[in-house]
Length: 118
Image (cartoon, rainbow, N blue to C red):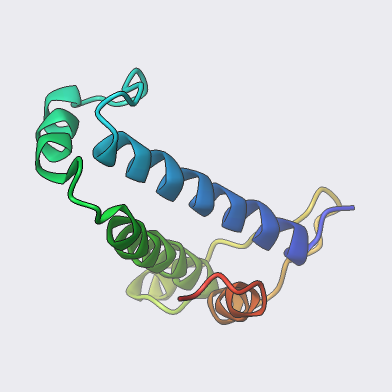
């Protein structure tokens, strides 16, 4: 049975994947850009970033951004935004059991516990 920690693990792995893929795509001119919609924009960033020795900085910035996006998404689910005045959306497992409240706070704790914050 899936639970909150399984959800957090999958979400964390997805964030890591997209940060890594994006960093490679904008700092390595040999990167395969078949997945991007705006290849020209990626190429322009590559021209600025390749051989600058800042891929770790790019990774750190992107990691913070995608973690912020995940936090915002979980805040919406937790009812911590204006949308809650119109109604709520709940995450439930296959058996209809809610993953609970406070997902945005618990996910942040999960990331800290996993050493995902710099």
